[in-house]
Image: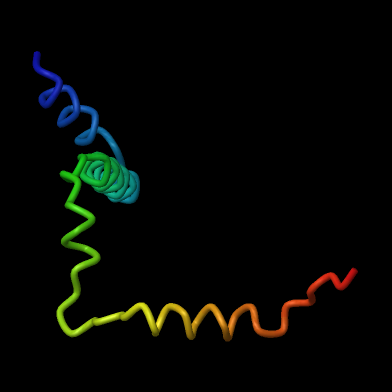
Amino acid sequence: MTIEQQIQEKAAALPPDKRQELLDFAEFLQQKVSSQTKRPWKSLMGALARPGLDITEEDIAEARREMWGNFPRDID
C-alpha cells in the first residue's frame, strides 16, 4: 500500500470536522515546502540600478553635511 493510499484510508476514517483539519494541515505543509524553495540570487547591480535615480557626489556631500552638521565636536 502506498503512502497516498494510507493517507486516504486514514482520512476516510475521520469525522468531517477532522478531515477539514487534516486538509488545513496539508495546505500548511504545502505552503511551508513552497516557501523553503530557494530562489536564485539576483545581481545587486540590477537592484541598485534604478532608472531615473541619479545621485551625485554633491547630493551625498549635502546629506553628510545635514547629518553631521549638529554633531558635537571636542574642543581642546
